[in-house]
Image (cartoon, rainbow, N blue to C red; front, side):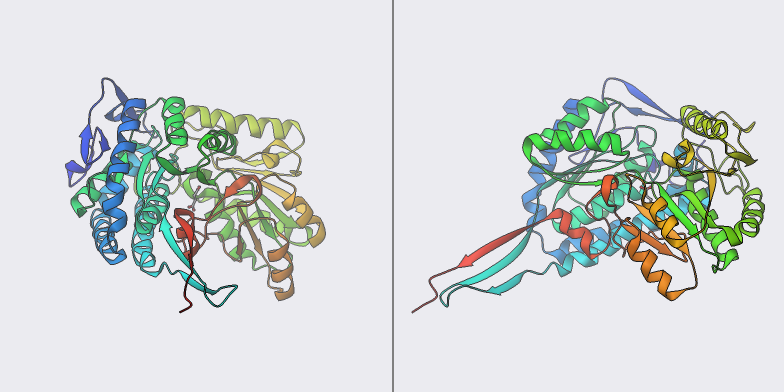
Length: 485
Ligand code: SIN
């Protein structure tokens, strides 16, 4: 039914301390493209979350005591298995999440790359020796794993958002518990199956699937044995999870919402800007935190850019992600479509012009047409809110100062993009944008070697890159005294 070569990759139970754990009731996982049932998964809860944390705690000493080389060898096997099963994992991801198959396989490669990258980087966790304040002392700094890491991950990247966190945690010597989104648990459970096949010891990587978001979230954020909590999701949910973590003063890292500006200056290579905007806006049907949210176009190129952009949007093929040629899938749910419909309607009421699309599509209740709005202003609902859907609002500007002020006029600060050929402007605008990541003449910025993360209410901490390990390590200072004879 699912068309996977290896049916054993479809798992229906939570993976806790090295065993597959059934619970009293089940959750339905449905395909957003067709509404059909993909699988039933056992619905775990608070009890199983506590068991997973206990397993992670029990496994911590042995895992953190392994050498970085030993951990890297196991992680490398996990990476190899993910890549060897890329086709099946991609297909499973499309079935439960909806993104086109090529994009889903791309996500598997993207997620696996974090495991490969951090396996290597774990070998380079260096300490420090600092001159002391007197001759009989030395200051020695070592880095140690924080301990048990708990996480909650979203449905928009069912594999990569787990891999990005787990890879850094495991490489640092931590053990890991994840509660994946209930819409997309199958990708997470398939990762657990491959972790087991790779020989990652019981308790090191745990996946607990359940729809008691509040109860399980409270355990993950408040359990005294959890040292660090990490979340990817909306800013609103992130804020309440941060406050829950306060009771046990956990280390937290948060990858939250965005409202990315995409700025096209008069001197830009317009064809490159159109291609970059399409890639950044319509990846995952507009459902990524780094998706372009507002397209600012300088007046001199407004008409030419808009014409070319609309022509490119018309080329997108929307449909079931398993169908060849489809490059834009459904949204995650009918409610997600309704939210986007409301933003578009309210913005048209406020004066925006509908240039393309603008409707739920006949393809199914989770499909919303690729949409372009012109004559948008920065205060309209479609620009002021994170859209999380396939809508491009186009805003006109005149000067660099004006566009910087408008681009920064948001509580979010995750990603931003701009296109220009002026080297001075590259530096001025690059430094002037209040965002954690900036694409300069580039619409796709995510990769394992780069520090992914935001400023302002888009979160804290960095994932990926050499900086990503720091979030999973504590710095310990050893004061070496009594050195005099
Ligand atoms: C996200 O939407 O949070 C992640 C996007 C990415 O990793 O590129």
